[in-house]
Image (cartoon, rainbow, N blue to C red; front, side, top):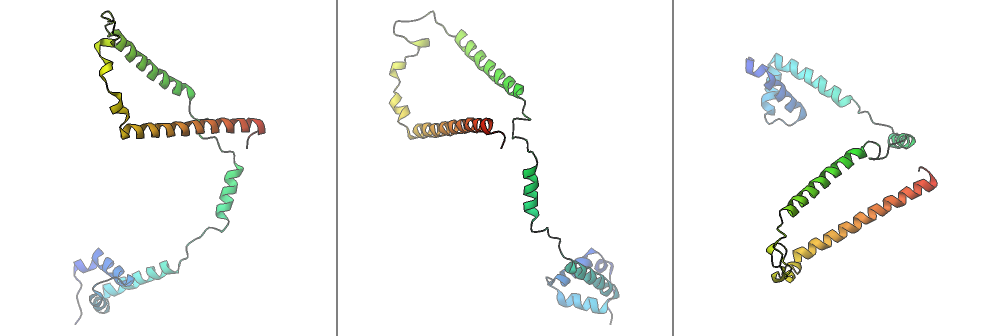
Length: 180
């Protein structure tokens, strides 16, 4: 008794079930084997997919030569590579941004100083009517978070100084010996 194929068995479901069967990861192997044996459409499609599978398995992947990486690196070394940022960053833009921020800071300071009432000065030295003698600075600077913040800033400052001095040393070396 032959199994007649219904339209739902002929669609993409048939192909996915056949691929799973060919790959060996099908959960319904006996059903698919029975459909292949008894249904001509399934048998023809199985033969096509098996041919495609064997062609894919037979093709060799192209591999680059063993010297490929070395050849690429030699070619890169041979070409003149532009320095990182000196060539394409416009210093006028940087100076313009710096001037903007300096102008904003000076403007805020000027506005703040213009709002101070210096006419009511007293002999005690209170600036703006605030008594700074009552502030306990030992509570603020004995805090471990402040100490950690200060240590991190010192380390970052030293790293910045090291980078600056290394750049200067490199610039002197390239000026003395020419371009490396």
